[in-house]
Image: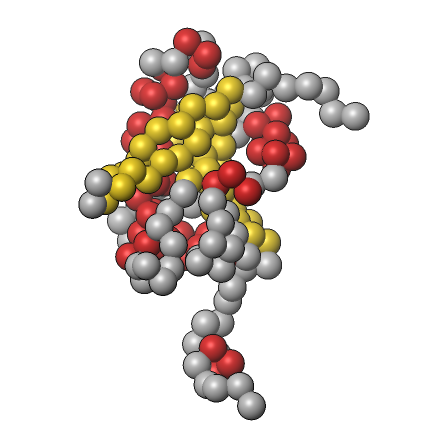
Length: 173
């Protein structure tokens, strides 16, 4: 059995669009190890649901717990869903915006929180992961031209790929 962890969580708005607040959860554990002594890297997790359903709350607790235990600051976001917006206007853009927000603000947000006593974020080290639609989103992140850092790793759990394949565009018999 895994040892218990003292997970801390805060929720913040990372973007407001037409009076709709898009929110992200930040999860951490104060006494988790740093990977190289320079602070805790960021793990951005993108929920599944084919970009049309889902929310940050469906990410399995075990995944969050594992990443925290090995030293990551875990960031999980909600994004506007299709078809109310296009995949580019919603999930792709919001994922990028949330990552930029986390890179620029996580350290200062945690510094204002008593529960994050001495916790430091290494915003130069970022991994992105997701399953299903979130995995497909994760695969788009390294190609975003205006990210302030290079993505260190992408973990794609059965994400959507090859969207230009005829099966996505031609009627089924």
